[in-house]
Image (cartoon, rainbow, N blue to C red):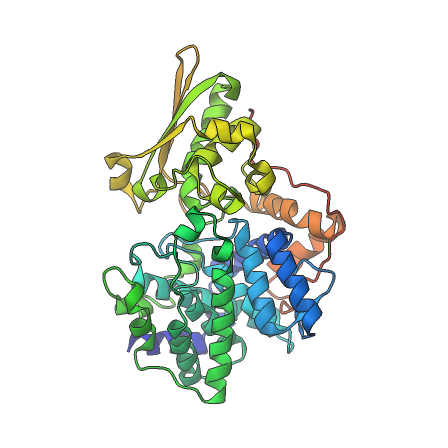
Length: 457
C-alpha cells in the first residue's frame, strides 16, 4: 500500500539523505514559522488560552511568546500552532492548497523538549513530516466543497514528524499516520470568510491529534489498513489519489515547492496586493484621488469579496478590505489586519473595490494564481497593473534578507531587538540543538512592526 511506502520513507529518512538545498530551505521554513508563532502569540484569544492552560497545570513544553510559561506537550502544540496560524503569515504550499509547516513544527517542538535531540535529528524529522503532510494533501486535493484545508490532512504530517523524532520503526509510524488521518476535522471555509475564529484553532487540533496518534501507536493502538486514504476519502472532491502518497519520495522534495508570505492575509489576496504595490510604486497614484478599483482574478480568490469585514479574521479573507488597506495606509503586514485597522476610512474605501473572476485568470489557475488591479481616478485617469503569480513562491521567491526582515518585525516586539540575531541563528543553523522552543516573553509590547513593503498612500 502506498501509505506503507510513505511510512517507510519517514522511518528510514536520515540527515545524510537530505540535499543541501533541502536543508537550507527547511531551516528557513523553521525560522519563518517560529516568527509567525511569536508574532501571533499576542492575539487576545490565543494569549488568554495560553494563560489559562499555563495557570492550570505545569508541564515540560514551552508556550511560545510568554515569559517561560510551560504546559503539557498537547496543550503547547495546540496553542503554539494557533498562534502561528492567526496572522496568516505562515509558510504555505500551493500544490497542497494549505500550510504544511504550521501543521508540523509546533508539535515537533513541544514533543522535543522532553528529551535532548540534535539539530540534525530535529531537521530530519521536520522534513519527514513536511513531505508526509504535502503528500497526504495531494491525495485529497481538491477538497470537497466548503472545506478549509487547515486541520484536514495536516495531522498525518504531524504524526510522521513526531514518530521520526522519536526514532520509531516503520510499522509504528504507519499506525500513527493512519490514526492521525482518522482525526481529520470537518472544517468549514466559511469560518474564515465569516470571521468565526474557531478557524484559528484548526491547526492546533491537527497538531494535538497527530501527537496523540503517536502516543497511541507506541502504546499498542493500531490503524486501519490503507487508513490514510480511507479516512481522508470523505474530504476529497474526486476521491483519494493513493499514488500521491508515495510519488517520487526522496526525489522530489515538496518542501522546495512551498511559498513564503509577507502580506498578513489569505494567500488568495496576495496577487492583488502585489499588483497594488506595483501600481502605486510605478504611478504614484494617491488614494485620495481614486474613485473606484477593479480586481480581476481567479474564482477562488474572487469569492473573497466581502467589503465590510466585522473582525480581523474576516478582514484577512476580504480582497476589498486588503486592497483598501494597502491603498489608504500603505500597510499589508500584521498591523493592517487587526480589529483596530477596521476604520471608517478603510471600510469606506473597501466599498469602492469590485472583485470579479474572469475566464482569463481562471484558465491559468492553479499553475498561475494572478490578478489585475485597475484604478480610476476622479479626473478619469485609469491605471492598471497585473501579476501572474504572487511573490514568495518558486516563480518570484523572496530573498533571505527579505525573510529576515519579516522575522525581525514579528519577533523584535516580543523579545526585544537584542535577542533577534540569536534566535534567527539558532533557527537557521542546521547543526544546532533545536528542540528547545523559544520561551521569550514580551520586552517591548508597545512596539509595532513596520510593513515589509510600504506603499505610498
